[in-house]
Image 1 (cartoon, rainbow, N blue to C red):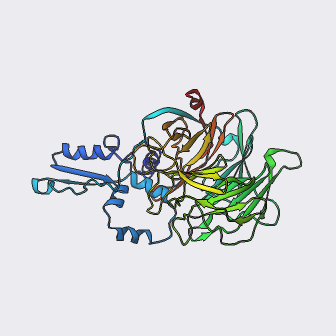
Image 2 (cartoon, rainbow, N blue to C red):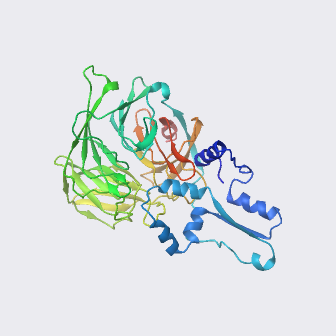
Image 3 (cartoon, helix red, strand yellow):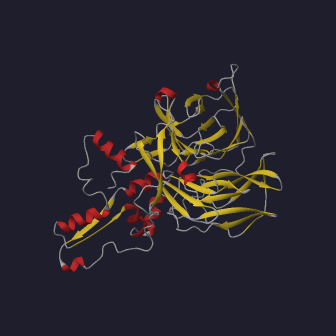
Length: 465
């Protein structure tokens, strides 16, 4: 079901390619249509649920635990998306059986649909094959080095005709006002090389320096050690031929043996720190702890944090704001998306956890990106399972707590745009948001990537102020 969203389009294309097209999806595209189909055919009763609801509400907890412990697993996005596109249905004839609800309504899995859209953000493609190598990868990290240079590293993607953990860096350079060109570069020198990590974070230290924290090599192998990337121009001073040198910025201790975490710059006593929060590890499926890294000394330090400790999560978003951090969404310990928005507030003696009250409440999500623009928190894309709609951009006014929804108009994007495992770069001067990479490895149709960089036009936000 749900054949018209991006995941449904890719699945349909897959079945057409193997000469097994799916018929009837347009007529019976959701659970309600399937139920109506059987009732119209003369069945006395019919009930149906998608596989996310079935798994969470009708499977014994012991069976769920058995499945989750079968093998190391780290592909939650495609698991939830696939379950959202399949359903289980029970129909019956006769009065006796029809009085029994096979799938009784469950309060454990409420439908939480987003509010009606307040507007639309048009999407358009800013790179193609004629503008350098594509960015077919997911689980990577991207950082804006300067207004005209974006560096992406790591992730799983396409390299030299095969799918693998990517070792090349991707450079996106702006030549004219709105003209971007991609380029792939290797690390230079004979020293430390890129180790193939994914689900790491990258933080800009300067126009030429980037810090890489965490990540994994496999679901049972964390990427240890802090890496520092130094970007330098070649002799001809061309941005097309930048060099990247990798050095280890600290010992390979186990302080940060996690991935799917967040790293955000904060301030305390006029010093700059990186706040590393959440994620998952080999031993813990969800982490609720945090660490502070002093940028100047590259040392882990202890800073007092007051308030109620929030629920652990991974694949959440984190943004710097007013010297603290805004944390939104994520996947919790029960492998269910979260809707909470938290503020790690800077106070005189350290930091304080606060909850941000939002009205109307937002749909729980994870694997999204986030930015703060003109006092508004933007949650971009992601995966949710409590609604049959597709995540667009949720806008939260940080002064009033009011939330609104904006759809993404993909009319001029010539492929199904999947916004999970992606990165995004905010260009506030241009009121644009660049979407880089994204996709995943699905059990049905294999690996899918967003091939090119896409931009969202956010100008309608300021027009509506």
